[in-house]
Image 1 (cartoon, helix red, strand yellow):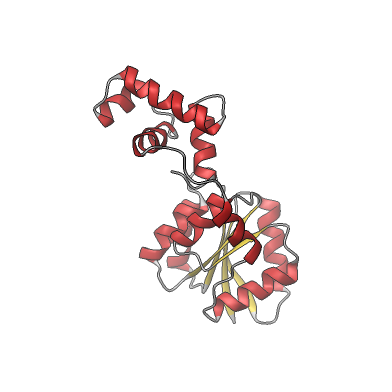
Image 2: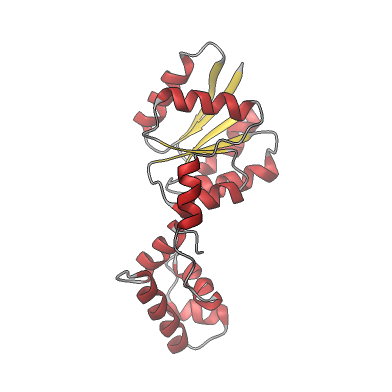
Length: 201
């Protein structure tokens, strides 16, 4: 029996996935979580072979959760599910130790086959998405721009960012302005979000 944990902040999606998977004779959903920060405790309480993790969750996203599980529960294999098929997500998922990556509009049979393959130790990699990841734009941000944009992603004020990186407020503003221009976005929060989706920060 393949024991599954599902983490997805959308109750209907989570319930539908559980209902679908429980129809299979060799698959059992043993735990459901509404956010990534609930996963480690759920795995302590319920032994699972595979964690199906949504990328975007409100408190702790699936990519951060996958990286955490690599240390806290290395025996659990991770299969990332996402609505947003972004090259950066694909790269970050495997860097975080995921064993597979699927979009939520994949046919049910593809998801079930992926679960069985991951359980057997295979990596599930869609060749088309892998190629898109390789062909996606190279990172145009400088090291300092990446550092400052990563801090800006949390919503920290410019003065706090400047203090953290030991630069003047004006210099930080210049770096943020450059990053906004390179990402063709309207503000630093959008720039940080776009850069994260592309795998640049």
